[in-house]
Length: 119
Image 1 (tube, helix red, strand yellow):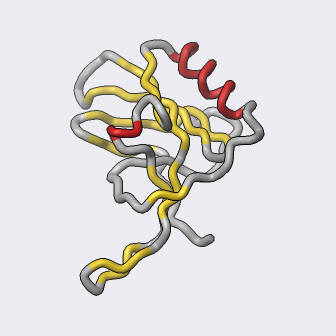
Image 2: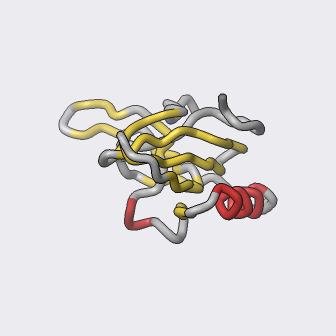
Image 3: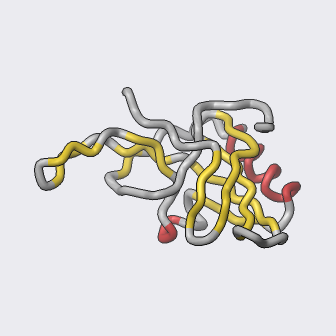
């Protein structure tokens, strides 16, 4: 499938999110309010959206992060990097986890597979 990968860094609702780790469909991001000092971490099960047509316009296939309604099932927020890394590790160790397909649009996302932290 030729899908658009999610960016390594993006802004969403007043926050900057930066990819810290990515392995397969599991991603960990550092989240900081623009102009703020407090940091939290988010761990996502990356979503895969199929291409579709709407109003005569083609929307390409793309990766996305879970919607706010999917928090707690496909995404989690942590106040320490250690707790986020623990969740990330537990998800990447689950070899039975498959790809997810949803027909949703999102503003947020991550990048191709990485096994080491981004600079």
